[in-house]
Image (cartoon, rainbow, N blue to C red; front, side):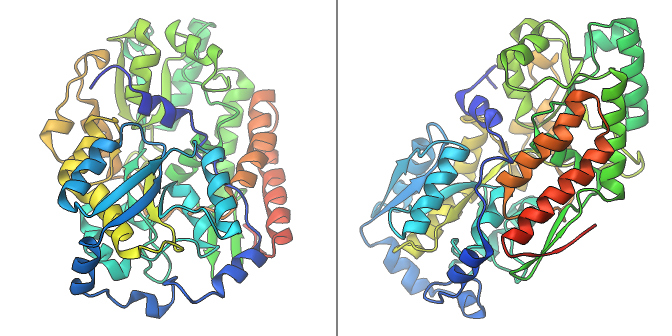
Length: 462
């Protein structure tokens, strides 16, 4: 694996939880009332016949695909070689907010939307609530279920069995740590969060210029990954109009008390991430760990070259060492937009792109995306890659093992931009100010609840 890649850099810079726009329930119900497409009704699950698929794949067709993935023409070439009648036009509509804003605008206007779009896991509910995605069950997607890591399939599945997208890449969370700093101060790799807190106090006392970790006060995505690991269930949709919001329950409170306490003690830093100061912090040894996702190793190797050879990877510390679990931060899918005039070709492309062995492996080896397919996560040519930046450690194997421990039950709300903004202005601010993070959870809960009710949702609290 090269030390860096544009794809890894751009992916990690995205604000995974601020990428999408909110939708009103009124708009959602209006969209759902249109039964002209496949949608999520029982009729939508009626299989498309093989003869129809064969005919569609031999009919000259151009698909438009909105994606931020660089150099994806290589994967597309594999599809076009198998299906020469189908041409795929790639459009980079931007990343994060820009990408989703353009998509939402096109959908609202009823014109200009692509046939397919790259959509991150946490953004899928924003588009299913407006009935904007094609249910892929009629096109054979159900047969792919066992090829993908269980939790990724759960992220793209609807409550009635719908398949809204095909997983492409993932971000199971682990811990990158400075072995040299740990060795210098006699710190063992913490297996539990209790051990992690003790190590944070010990290290910062021994060297006030060094922090065991940085929990960025501007990064709601990382917080949600830690919520995921802790077993929290902050959001749960029930039907089209009911949403349970529980961001200040007992599990969330435990997380807030822990991290808020360490921030208040001053033994961890809360610097904003993906800034010049943050990059400098890694290069000068200010942070001894990075609690990050599986895309983090490639990113760090290109951003902290002065520290090459000193880093290692390990699972996140655990709340219960006997039951190792993790959360996820990042990753995306390929979804078919319901308004497409070429649903068969688009659905087949989405499936091929992410399940064809050669295409899936190309994402892992060319764009350095962390795989969503079980076969790649068990492939010695991927997991056995020993990285010099990590002292020859097989880092991919570490994160492949972690991927098996990610819970399948975590859900997202349909208005992530608001959730993220409110987190930054409440919980994130409390961390940065070394204030009461537990109290900030209550404010966050209140703000999200008010917003959801104003959008027409019936809200159930913690």
